[in-house]
Image 1 (cartoon, one colour):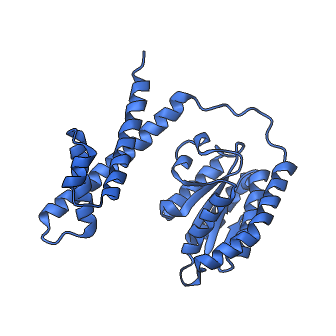
Image 2 (spheres, helix red, strand yellow):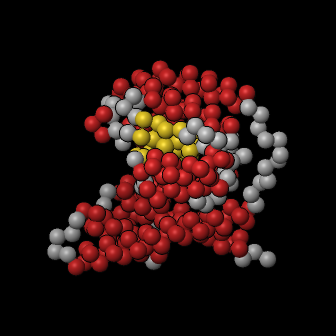
Image 3 (cartoon, one colour):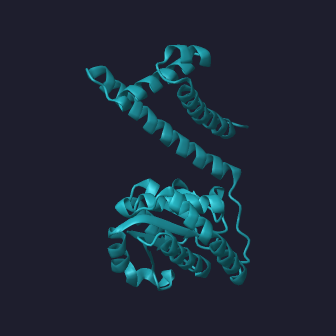
Length: 269
C-alpha cells in the first residue's frame, strides 16, 4: 500500500524521509513514497507526481512555517484531497500548530510530532492495509520499540537545520475567527442538509434504516433545544440512550456557541 509523503524545503524533506523509513520499519506491508528532487523544481515532475498519486492510499503533507504557503505544497495537498477521502489525508506539523494554518490545509487531520499523535497516524495507516494489517496489540509493541528512535532522530533534525530567522507574522484574531465562522457554517449547512434528507427518507419509508432513524431523532433534539426544552425533558422524550443524547446536545451547542462568538466579534463597534 502506497503512502504519499509531500514536502517542500530542507526541514520538511528530512522529516518526510525520516518518517517514511520509520513507517516502513513499523508497517512492512506499507510503501512510503518521497520525491527525491527538490520540490521547488517540481514543475518537471507533474507527470511523475500524478502517476504516484493514482495509487496512493494515504497522504501525509509535511508542513513548516517556511513552506505552509508554498504553491507546490498546496498543489499536492489539493491533488491528494481530490483523490482520497478526507480522513486519509493528514498534515504533519513540524514547527506549527493547527491554529497557524489557513484553509484548505486547516481542513485536514493534523499529526503533531509527539507520541500519542504519531501513534494515531500509524493506526490510521494500519487500517488501510486490509488483510496485511497488524493486530493492535502487536502494533502497540512495535510502536513502543521504534518510537524512542524516531523521537531522537526527529529532534536531531530540528537542531541540525536552522529555522528561517524571519519572523512569522501572527494571524490576526479577525482572520482566525472568520475562518472558524466559515468552517462551522459549512458544517452546520451540511448537517442540516443531511438531517433534512434523513427526516424525509424516514417519514417516507416504511422500514427506515438505523442511520435514518438516528438522524431523525437528532433533528428532534435540535428542535427541542430551539424550543427551550431542558436536557431531562429531551432524554425522557427521545428514543436514544441518555449519553448519546448528551453528546448530540453538546455538539449542537458547540456549533451554536462558535457562530455566536464570531458574529458578536463581527458586529462589535
